[in-house]
Length: 250
Image (cartoon, rainbow, N blue to C red; front, top):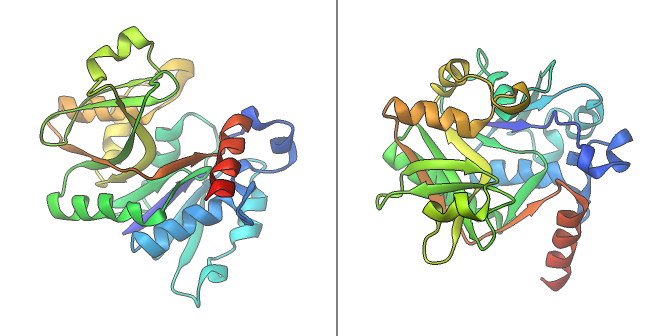
C-alpha cells in the first residue's frame, strides 16, 4: 500500500512561524510533525512508498525527509509531487493520479495520532471489507470545529458535514457524542475519478467531504473506523499547546 501525505498548505493560522518554516516541520517530542506521520504510515500501516504533496515555499520538507533513508536501512522510499495551486485537500490528493495505481493511505502532514498503532485498525478493516474508502474517526463533545460523520449500524458513512452549528449537528449526535473525521483516509484508486466529477465548493476549493457525497450518490461503500487515540493537530497555536500538554502529562 502506498502513502500520500498532503503538505502543500500555507499554514496561515501559525504565523509568524510559517512565514519561513513549513508547519509540517514544527517540533513535537523532538521530532518534526511529519516525521511522526511517516513513521506511523511505515511502521503501523505497512507502507514502503510515500508521495509527499508539496507546493511553493516547501523545499525545506524535501531537504528534511530526503528519499526516506533517514527512517530505516532503505526499505522506505519517499518521492514528491508538486501542487501548483492550493485548491483544497481533494485537489492535493488528485496530484497522485498517474502515479498511484492501487489502494493508498492519505495522512495529512500536520497532524498525527497517538498511540500510532491505532492506524492498524483502519488498515485491517479496509483490507478485509474492500470498500471504496475507509475513514479513521474519533468521538468528541463539540462538533463545531470539525468535519463530523453520520454512520449506519454497519459502520458505513451515511452523511458528513463540515464545522456545523449545534443545530445542524443534531442528526449526527449519538449518545451525546459526535464522530470526527481525522483527515486520515484509505482510498481505492477510483477516488481520482470522483474528485474530477465533484464540483468545487467554498472558495473554489475541492474538499474530501464533497467527494464522499459524490461517491455515496453512486452507491459506493465508505467504512468509518472509530479510534480512542489522541489526535494531535498542529493547525493552530492552541492545538499545538494541547499537544505539548498531552506529552508532558504522558
